[in-house]
Image (cartoon, rainbow, N blue to C red; front, side, top):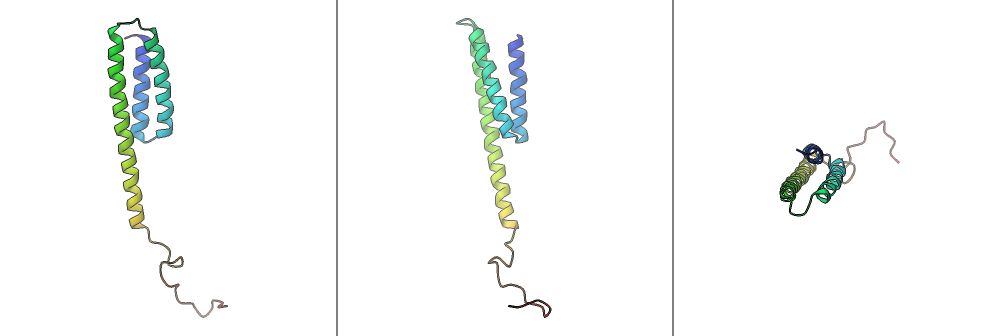
Length: 109
């Protein structure tokens, strides 16, 4: 394995880890870095090199895994928000019902 290909593997692993952890802003940076190194690696290969096809296939797999991870993360966040909306009740004083009865020691203006 060439040094550039080893670096691509490390960057791909970093990208996968960031997506799996839900750290999408950091994943965006990892993706940009991966693409930069991939362009540099492909530019250094001669035309007709079989390594180009292999790198292209690895890129497609990584892109698909990343897309699926992002979709799963979005779905999970949406489900959590929906559960939160079901669980939380609006405070009674803000349109959720009548205010509690006043006590005699409270000032009523």
